[in-house]
Image (cartoon, rainbow over all chains, first blue to last red; front, side, top):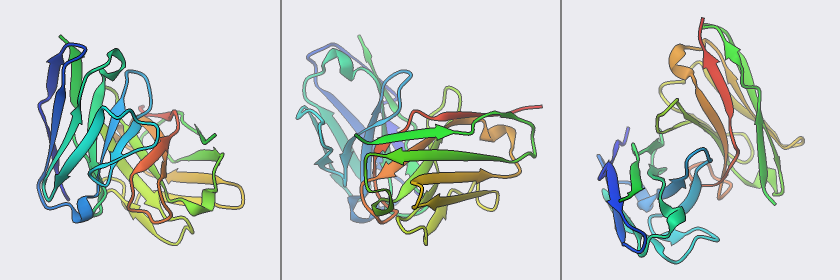
Length: 108
Length: 121
């Protein structure tokens, strides 16, 4: 099983700041099959990025993903108030598919 | 508009069985793999099971293998999760999630709002 470790656990930032979220896999993820999801409090997750770097339909341009192998990154260029939420990475390169434990982006 | 509506959640006793359903609309159901993902109280996301578009291929998390069965009825646009031998650790909000493509290993581009299963005596 591929274990995903997200860091940091919590990011305390202000609106307008940039955010960088990390996701490290215990083994190489085939084809960069890594996705990132945003989950606001009380809501279902929302897909942001898939395939490591492809932005999902309707997702603002301030969200971008990159990475390969075992290291993946989600960047939010300028935080808007609605971006303060939990973020999860997810690997679907090998079964069982797994999620990271999440990074909370909170208002400083 | 894509819609996923889960149902079947309930309070059940340890060892009991329960079937969850997810009614899908707004897309070509048989053209997309589907998954169940759960989230325990105050916890993160845990993938549970997946099924390919035709229903021929299924995948399970180790924690539910042998106890849960995922299936689909493409004529009715419904996804199912049959849960047997329920344990306290199965207590969670269960989401139905649509994959981007037909093949099961894929990201999830739409999620339902979930249905709650509580396992307690």
